[in-house]
Image 1 (cartoon, rainbow, N blue to C red):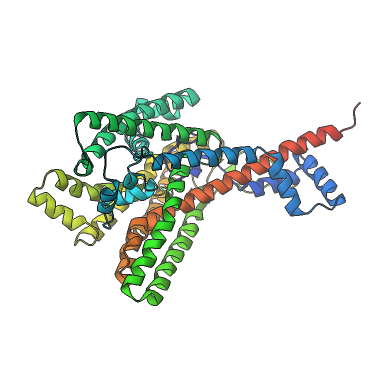
Image 2: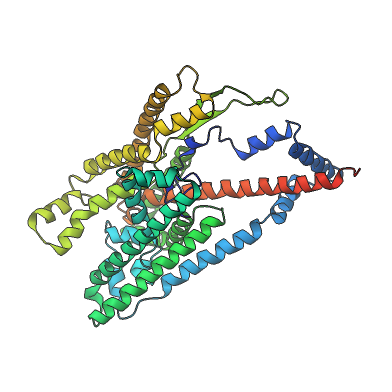
Length: 487
């Protein structure tokens, strides 16, 4: 199901993995090497097949392709691509009675909050397609219910302590919430485009709202099916596809703006250099971990190859959510000013608008606050300490229980500071690039979109590798038992 991992940790975009819940979460390749050296049945089977491969002269590339074709991956990848194509088709099926060209032109102004959401939905808002709402209603519902778990202990117990049945019930509540948000947002969007409707009336409002709500729920179902295929979080894959689809138009606008300025030879290298360096920085930080060594009361020794376990914490465990929360609050005054043109509200909207006097300090303050809050919302030190104690694990030099909880709290606090600096850089990168080059297209795409792209790509790659390794072991065991002498 989108939004919740197998351990009940909420992560709607699939980026802020709370890996600390799994002690010793080593890479699949490391696990494979340990198995091969341990004398286990899997290792014997793997070794037997390796001998066969060497005898037949099979190369590493051929071995990989055999593993890939013998696994369920080709069928799963085909299904994923089919569902993602279906999610894009709905973008181009418009709701009736609206001047789409005029509405799309109104979204071209940089900094428009709908313009940013339009990027995340792959242009479905500007095209006014039946999938215009995207999976935003589900994300909103997930945010609300996750916040409610910190207020109502019964919801927290349902999510984390009642097993699979409790998680399914919690997810059902989120679906109901998503339906409610979809109805409200559908009506709001229809009212928002009212100036561009040829014949606005109650019948059109009801019909269009129903179509948009149905589209949002169809996307929610597609996201759940994608998640069940175990090649990535369904919600993340949908957003990833939408952002990728907007890349050509974003780069096209960049080239057009640079040509109009007449100094493309100077501006474009700076722009694309900033784009490349930002991507490189995201990859580095996304893969960065703070590894806390662990000791166990009983250790499994396998031929002297036992490897020290560790408790990994991501530097940016909160992912992109703090930026999204901060952007939503910064956009609130502008939204209120549209419906209630009060001078005070208009002044506040101008102050926190990109380029305004208060935009940078307020944005950084909100990002730091939400990053700290969200880090501890998805990973509670006391729960981790209790789980370590139950498993007979301890941190060297730290007593189990309250001392371990305090130690983990201090580690997370320091990591949240580093994460805040990183997210603040991503949020301000478009402003800096715009100030140097004068190009505004990076404002709409932003470092936020790059963070989502990199996070989803690395997560999906990891899951594909895991699928290949698991299928390799399944095949190896079958070969091993088949070659065993029968008594």
